[in-house]
Length: 249
Image (cartoon, rainbow, N blue to C red; front, side):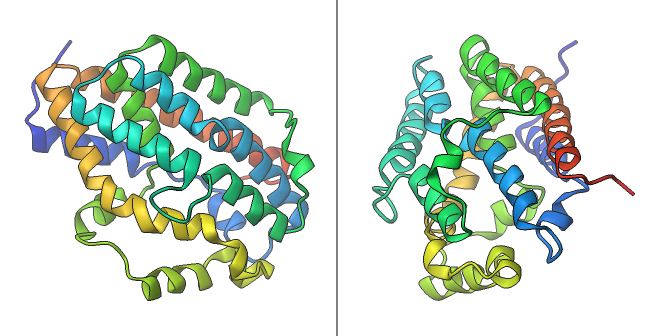
């Protein structure tokens, strides 16, 4: 059954889903007690599931020929992911590997990552979504669910201008990897690049998806897949936590 929603109602439904992108293990990984071995498991799974191939997944959506505004947004994001041309001049996966090197994890450890069963299931689902579903479904999954956070409702509409260099450096110095694990801030260019470009793009992406989903009457389809994706993401994070020996209290 397809129900009618206004643009504002649909946007709120999107925020409702993304606001539940919270996993019980996140405070542990962002805290002081996570070990380097546990962080290694966590980051290797993150890298292989979506960080390494994020622009490839976006490229599949671009190939579905969405409306020109969305094509431009996807192409711009792919350009930044692959070249860093809008920020610091290096591909984002390279900046990620530099951050890992700062933590003491050699580049070779990220070449052939064996996915945990739930990581494999989530990545397989992302591949299927981007290959087989409408472009708007895959775009919502990648740009809202995968890239988004539980704080999107507040951050998307409170970020009216780009962050200053000092504001970005403050975020870097307060990052858990710097505070709790001694990561030298010089290895945090991935965080810098993302803070330089992503916050100002978030509202634009939400507005585009809301506009196109309402116009094409695909808002129910988008919401259904976001709900499915959220559950698979939570299971994926369950798998990482279990592999790290963590149990929900």
